[in-house]
Image (cartoon, rainbow, N blue to C red; front, side):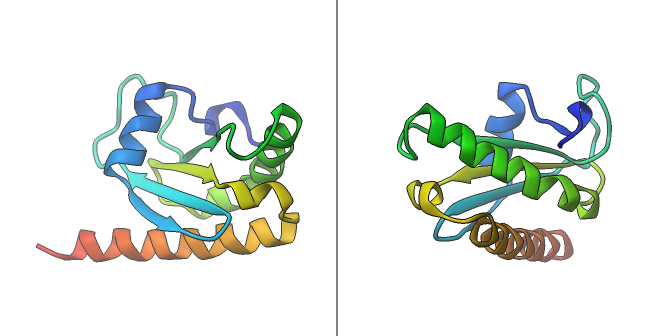
Length: 126
């Protein structure tokens, strides 16, 4: 399970990460990743935090909660590998409703690799 201090809960954090973070889209989900260089005083900690967006387009409430639980379970061990201060938003797309946990895990790993690569590229450019 994802610890409480590793969860994104504020709307501003979600909006900022989606707007300013690096995006990597896959067939079942989209990964948005942002690393804050200056810590937010309102943020509970400087460790990486994650949040999930699963809209009604994915399915009814039962399906959306199932997808969210699977994603939360998949992100929990991976969050320690993210840079300190990283904010991660995983947005599920409609095909996520029929995907297995293994398929979601592959898309998540691929999306995280791509987003981290984009972050490194922008950090090294002047």
